[in-house]
Amino acid sequence: MAVLGVQFVITMMMATILSRVGAHFSLARWLLTSRFAGLVRYLHPSDEELRQYAPNPITKDKKERRRGKQAEKNGSSKNDGTFNVPRNIDLSLDRAPVVVGDLVQLRFYSEYQWLLDFAAYSFFTYALSEIYIFLLPDKANQEVNLSLVWLILVLGFSFRLLLTLTGQYFEGDEGGERSLVLVMGLAYLLVAMLVLVVDESNLETGLDEAYRSFNASAAAFLESNAGLDSSGPASKLVTKFFLALWCALIGALFTFPGLRTAKMHWDSLKFSQSNVRNVLLHVGFILPLLLTTLWIRPLTRDPLTQRIYRNMSKPLMTGAQFETMRLYLIILSVVYRLAVMPTYLQAYLNLAYQKVQDLKQEAGKISNIDLQRLVIRVFYYLCVVTLQYVAPMILILYLSFLYKSLGDGSWNGTATKIPDQDECPISKTPGEGAPDIGLGEMLNQEETVGAIKEQFSLAWASFKHIFTPQVFKGLLGFSTWWCCFSWFLSAAIGIGYQTYFTTA
Image 1 (tube, rainbow, N blue to C red):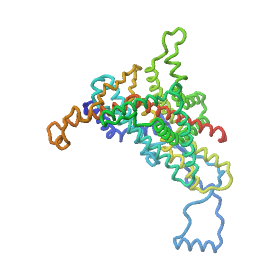
Image 2: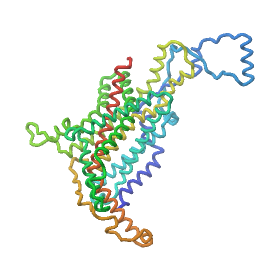
Image 3: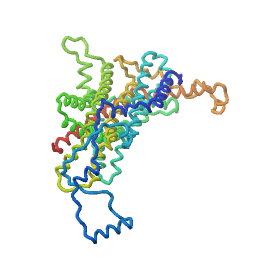
């Protein structure tokens, strides 16, 4: 097996571009500061602007003035520039375009920039590797597909950021957000348990085939290498229980991103003055629901791949073409949601104006610091909101890429031949076919590299025999479907909340 080859060259080339070009061109910055985005933020009023609305100070008597002077002399004066203004003042906020100098001061900006930029370069790495595999499949099969490492790293970064963002709700004193995450996690756990008992003829999870393939391969490996007679190392009930826990964790992590997306969608429709834009926003919102139905056999696969309609001699598409269409629709949905992202983010930035307008309906007074903080806080959390919008999409997109590559999918709708178990000689022991020598003797011989390569080849063949494409297809396909389902369901719950509990 050739470890160093074209795949390694592609990886090193993209790593060099990421380190050299990333500092000058950033997709993350472009999405927030370009003319395409056109984002505008609201500036907080200055103290000078607010002082003209402040009431005249009350005249103090001689005794109070003497106490104030004595406090100033002792350095214990409480005059920190804070004063009160009426809440119902007629205040207009200035606006300014979002620029890079403002973004670098925001919370989670570095995490947002790294995730988007690394995901973009990983996408190009994966695309170049797929082109190479398509053009020279025989040569590419002899090398390790290093683009998969990039995909796994992107998934790890996305998952870690979602964990970090959700963990912020557990740090505050208020327990409302913490309770909501826990309740939604338990609710998703219940839903996942119900989903996992649905028959494969209705919901195309592929988990049953993955379980049978893994148990058969693992049992053969244990019997041939360790002499153990086993029906398989994994219990189906235990496996599905841990899958349900994984689904509950994903649902809990997608709770606040879904609620935030629903809030921005609701505000976008409220501020929109174009029916065409409203239709585009609605299409983008229901795209995750469309992706979810692609795994429901009676709704999508059976009508397209099995039924023969009038004046037709065969179904509309084959099973391989249907899976290819599913991959392209996932990519299209993510690109579409990225295209409408500026509209959602501008709706979020408009919250500063809306909060000031709502303040005018209240009686009483508010300090200048609290009023300024009310406006500043919206822009301060812009990158947090952007991450909540983007991270689930990246997770779904790169899961689908892994699903295609490890599950032997294709981009042109042709069925890929899945190798039989006999093609991977698992019956060989790790030392068979390689020199029977110890590690110390191996390091002292001239053919050390060849021996290590042979050992690595046998270990890689054993891994591929146990974790077959059916296993990856089942696990990654179900994970992709569940992320799409959680993505839409959390947003749908948020829309329900906005409909019944938010006043116009």
